Length: 310
Ligand code: CP
Image 1 (cartoon, protein in one colour):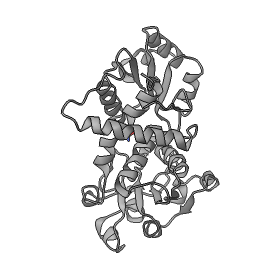
Image 2 (cartoon, protein in one colour):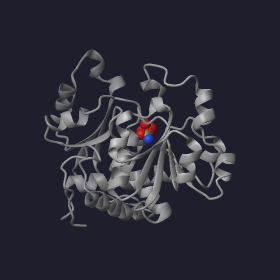
Image 3 (tube, rainbow, N blue to C red):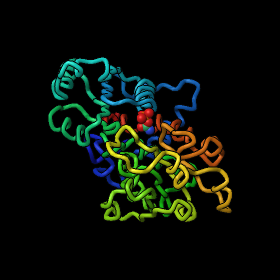
């Protein structure tokens, strides 16, 4: 392992080259092998201190990063906004500078504001990893999604991937579009007109408002959650009506006459965007995505720490 990424931080997939993404996925292959050993820990990031700053709720990403860091033998400090001095009015820069004064090398940050990680990267010396910034980007989710498609279908290049649901409020959608296109996949977005941003066609994706047509077109359907917490107005009449128009069930999948792969970044709203029999079926690789997330995040941390020549 002696190749390097072209970037100092992981702020978004937009800034990565196809070679960067390939390097991350190939490095993740090696860490996945490590994770299947009896002793799952390697000393790669010994003496590196990583702060996990979560200003917004998370289950998968927070736990996955922490596990990846522990498997690499890094020292970790965890911070959550709900129990911090942010509640007393402290600014982002002051919070982070106080943490960095304790000699932190890398920062993994989730923040509700788009661009928060870019802002931070301009003001501090540590390496910054975006763990989701508002409705903007979620780069490690897109990387683990690409890794999971490659694992399931052999490659990403040439595959037809439909991203279905609340595109407007999704950071997963934008990062997936950039990542899949850089790897040579064809991408479609599908959802109600009110939840598909008008600019999205300019990114070179197909736009479809009919779920059945999207499922007939794709080899992979990445189902997104309705993000009620980011919706300040009503974008559709009711969840029941949304499910009738855009919910995927087993009967619908079986009627396609060929098997497509179902993905979901989580958390799932069971019975809304997909039924339980779909989420728990062999067609769904949802828990595989979560498993792959640890190896992919280990690869990102390892490559950004720049210890590839050691
Ligand atoms: N997929 C994802 O980002 O999940 P969390 O919000 O639980 O981290």
